[in-house]
Image (cartoon, rainbow, N blue to C red; front, side):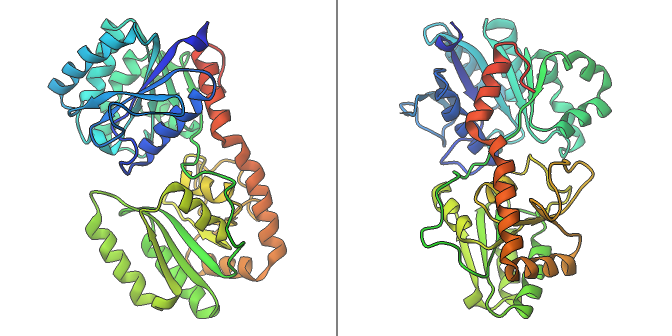
Amino acid sequence: MYKKKGVLIVTGSCPPMRCGVGDYAYNLASALSGTGTPVYVYTSAEGMGAGYKKKGVEALGRAKGWGLLAVLSAFRGLKKDLVPKNIAWVNIQYPTIGYGYSLGPQLLCILLKLFSGAGVISTLHEFRSARLLRKISLIPFLLFSDKIIFTADEEVAAVREMMPPLYLRVRARYAVIPVGSNVPAGLGAPAGKRAGLVVFFGLFYPGRCLELVAEIFQTVAQENKNAVFGMIGDVHPKHSRYYEQMRAYFETLLPKDRLEWHIGESSENVARILACASAAVLPYPDGASFRRTTLMAAMMSGVPALSTKGPDTPAEFRDGENILFAYDRSEFAKKTLTVLSDPALAGRIAANARELSREFSWDKIAARYVSFIRGQNAG
């Protein structure tokens, strides 16, 4: 039977490494194990150790690197484990911070397809926002994978527009399965909501609209003397200098006694801090979408979220009902102040957001993976 066959997840990053896709891979592994599927993970040396086993998830060694020679060696070792471990499918998560710019994962995909006997599934993240060379580098996954998983409809549309011949080849073997939040839902705030706490949540790197967030916070602080501001997240390993610059910028615009920093917290602590917040300011350059796990984390935590609307923002996000959209500093500040002063509005948005986010729970995501692996339509 299917559930007696294992799935091996290959990911360049995995906790305790800091990487959104790495967190996704770990949560997916844990959720899949809950379906009765034996789950194994192969990741970088900085990730889970070779003897790791928890929640039905077992590590199959650690990569010495992701260069071509290292991947050749890794493939030989992994191939020996496929039959004894009864592994039916290998799922490659791409890209991750841990891979760097190596083409090793692409080589591994080809080797697995041609020489392993296992099915190959590639989960492709952020095709639409990738640079041209990165998009081109994904061609081996599209050509050699037995199944492709995209995380949003707009990702599929981007492949169709840029690579029509390849899209025609994959259209019968792909599924769209959304990402889930890396922050556990339902932990709740230990002492309830903190009136006036406005937060930002995310990875600190250029392009994350942090300059805009600082200016929004400054305007809100000037109008509401009780507002307190929380910066929650992690520092991108390649952008520590940018983080320091942004931290200094925030501290020039806001009183230090009204500005809190929560950097590198565990996912459980992030959940508790989020649950305390009265509003979350989360602008994105390309607009809100289901791919934005920070947005989904806020919604799952029952925090009214303010974000930007883009051309690919799903219709399920309804302005004034389960989210608030704004377009510049002034409008963000005005709507944030409204949320802080209107408990009825805040409560309605939070309740509706939580209801929408139920569709993106990890158990539902895992069920769709299993359905897709079995050959059924995963949606």
